[in-house]
Length: 349
Image (cartoon, rainbow, N blue to C red; front, side):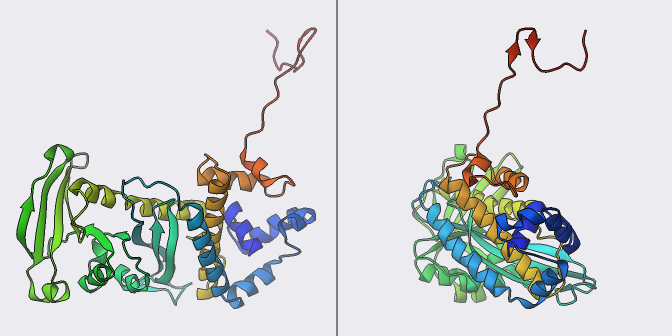
């Protein structure tokens, strides 16, 4: 795991590159807990060491990190826990990863994640073949009473949405145009806030109504910046309509989470081709993300996670206190001597 964390921080391209980089610092490896890590040993571990070891460790860190961020204020003024769900596809070459079924000529895996919007910390993650639909992973997610689950239209499955409602939790999603409904009552809205309608509705198709017979709330919002109208669907009748719109807007944080993971850690190219190797690499990437998040919150650092990762990369083999890595060192002023500045000039004019 130490070697793989090193590879994620350094963004190494292959097992050979990891081996070369570690050998270049052979006398300092004790500092990061590595005795030796030849390429063959890494390859064997990727194939044989069960990825569930790292999965369970990452899940433990998820719980610990969420405790660190429990007091973080939300961007939306609600007291409930708010979660955003989504899935992201990682493309793979089918000839190299034949087990990663997606399309006839293309392979892929899919990361299904739910993040706690207090700190944007993952609370759930699972890895499937690319062909698994987003909503198929939803039943695995533990639903918390009074929690708010913000999802896009791919998660509209009325069996699953009803299960959320039965646990006294809430969902906010987008309404598909294909869904038939009838209006029961309309409520006044403040159009200066971008709102267009706030209605209580019932599903009108026989199949949908059998799955979700209760009333739902339909909120229409006009986004002038993108010249489009968004229609939200929720089972929460207490929040103001503008709060429903703001909750859905907060779903964008999970898109940023996936973007950060893909840009800053090695989750788009892999050091092994077996399912175990791929899952091991992804779970250890999550370990790196969570450790950075813990450091940021525990030491009250203002730097972004990308900056913290860069500081670690630069100071990885330095023997110094951890917190000193992330705090700027005061620069010494150039001393002025009897005949001017002591620093020599390249050119004299």
